[in-house]
Each structure stands twice: as structure tokens, then as C-alpha cells.
Image 1 (cartoon, rainbow, N blue to C red):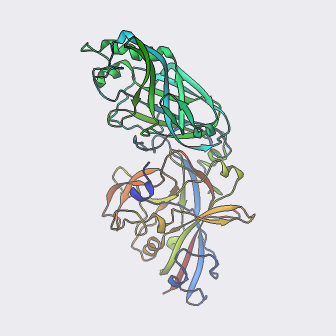
Image 2: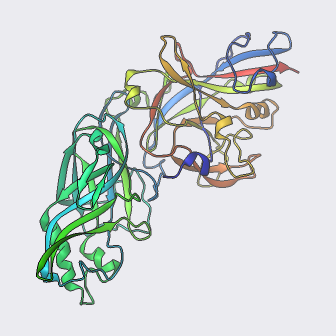
Length: 488
């Protein structure tokens, strides 16, 4: 799969909220730049202080979520039923598997000598996010012919676009078993989800071959085949506590049709594969979040700043970060300004792990185009190779420990140039947005005004990854804007 870190990065965001000006103190927090690049704090020439921030939680709904998924990305399937902070997730996969070419023939023999043995839907397994031991059941349905399921279209990951009623097959398993070796006719490998479908379905596929001499034959061309079979819908039942990632372009993704045919007075066995071919096979991944009864949902919509910020990968959640006192500070030389964000440890983090990256961007009310958010001015930029500086910007965490000795991650977003421009009066103060997106579209320009609309890739996949971090008024691990500065 593509590594989105190095090939498609465009915006790092992390937001911290609200503000309180605290007294100056000696530096006691390490920086990522090294002591030689920041003057030592002596309380006379160089100072260290923190501003409080305010955080406000929210979720992405259909009106604010524009996350589409290409066929080359990881598709997730399964159900999370018991995340103590983020509730439930229901991930479903829709895909077409088609003959490798048209017109298509089985066994290069007469249709009346074909006999079905079995038919198996196979998906190329990559990973599990969540509980690998809890059993879940996956159902396979045939998509209704009324669906407008097209290979030249992409689909919103949060929108349920399709209908399906005809159950074709089912399988109950623990996700950890997907790594095991399988032994099948001409197919012995690992990392497969194999779901056996009824022989009547296989017989139906073989019977289409009888129409091969007709202009309306099912295997004459792609549109003819789609008129007979629209595709598969896969959905987990109410059991399970994990989502599983699959590679639709992997060699293990296929419809395996095992059949026999008469040849030279003998009955031979063979297998035909209908693969997933991106150029003319459609796919979609629907991911539904349900936050009912969670502390996350209880925190959404209030006017009081939140003590905890809840961040979940697309399609997920975000936190608005405000720094209201920053414009009240007199102009000074900023050596370092960083938004410091600390993970709040919970034992469930070992099962439901942290996103690879967090991201921070800014809400710009002056934007009149489609995207109301922009990259952080001056601090997030493309290098000569067209890659964003997500690493130096702060999207990648460092490891630390909390007051109880638990391992946690800390993010330090570098806002030095942005803050300096605010203090010199050449930059407006924006509300910031902290989240963990897969990708997004927003404005990019240095300085703001010389803008282009850009697609930014942050995390390598959708769906997996969530974290709780201290908000601006958390009692122990508060989010804050740290300043190292000299007076002018």
C-alpha cells in the first residue's frame, strides 16, 4: 500500500485551546531543536512562559465530512462494539469482482459439461484494529440491481449509498486466525479471509456461459455482466470488537470458482478467478460511528471549554483550539512557540491505539472558496520536493511518561513563525483545529492570500486510531502554548 507519510503529505494540524497567561519561569521542558538553537533562559534576557488554551470537542458529520476513498487504500470491515470513550464503529465493504477479460469462457468447453464444486469469496488481509480474539460473523450479500455502483466513481466513507438484501454466505471467526495458512486447491498462502458461497450461486455463474454465443451474453462485455451481477456487500453482525483492514488490489482478493468439466471422457477439476481490477471494478468503504452514551458525545456542544480533547481518525472527531490571550501580548522576539499536547493514558489504548499522526490547521473566516480551513501560516510549508514538513511541524509524537509512570505520547506543534507574525501585527489570530485525518482539502499560501487549494494526506489509512489528550483546563496534563522569547 502507499505510504502517505512520504509521498502525499500536505498539512499537519494540532490544536490546543484557550488561554491564560502564566508567570515566567526557567525552561524545564526539552525542545526538539536542541539547546544551541534556543538561547538559555536566564530570567533577564530570555524568558519562558505558557499561555492557556481552550478546547471544544466536535464530530464530523455528513455536512462537514468530504472524505472519499480510492481503490488503492485499505478498506475496513467489522464492528467495534465497546470502545469505552469512542463507542461503536460499523465498517462495511462493497466491491465488484469480474472476469479478467471479455468475452469470457469457462474451461474453453461446452457449457452443458460444466459442474460446480464450490465458490469462495477471498479478501487479502492486512491488519486488525481492536480485539483480535473476540469472534465476529461476516455476512456476504449480493448488491441489488437498483444500485448505481460505478467503477469511475468514488464514494464518501461516511455515507451509506447502497442497498442489499440477498444473503449469499456467512463466516464466523476470530480476526487473529486470518494470519494462518490456508490450504486450498492451487491456493496455499496466508493472510486471507475466505467465505464460502452457495453452490447455487456458482451454478448461476457457470450458466451465464451458455449465453456466450448471444449478443446479450453475460460474459460478452462489462455492461452485460453488470446487468446480471452488481457486486458484493460485506457486513459484520453485532458481535466483535475490531475492524479488519483488507487490500482490494492484493493477489488474495478474488472470487474463486472451483468447477469440473468433461475432457477426453474424463472429468477434470480446475478453478477460475474473478479478480479486483481497479480500472473497471467498483469499490466503496462505509464507516459508521456511533457515539451514543460516550463521554465524547457528552462533551460536544457545550460553551464551557473541555478538559479532555477526543481525537479519532476519519471519519471521526476533532477539537477546536482557541488562544484568546495571544493578541494581548506585546511584541517580542519569539525563539520558540509550540503547542504542547499530552496523551491521557487508559488501559484501552493498548487495544485501540493512537493515530500515527495528529494534525493542526486553522479556520480562516476570510476564505470565500469551498474550503474554510488553511494550513498554519508560515510554519507548515512544502519543501523543494513538494513534501510538507510534517515532522518538524510536530505531527509526529515523542514518547514520555505521565505522573503515574504510564508511557504516553507528547506532540509539540511548532507555531513560532505564526505567533511572531501575530505579535508584529502582520497575521490574524485564527481558531485552530486538532484532528487525525486521513486526507483533507484546504487552502495553502505563504503569506495567506496567495492561496492554492490543495489535497493533504496525513495518516496512512482511515478508520483506525484514536486518542484522548489533555484539554486547556485539564488539571494535570493541560494543553498549552509554550513561548520562549526575548524582550525588545
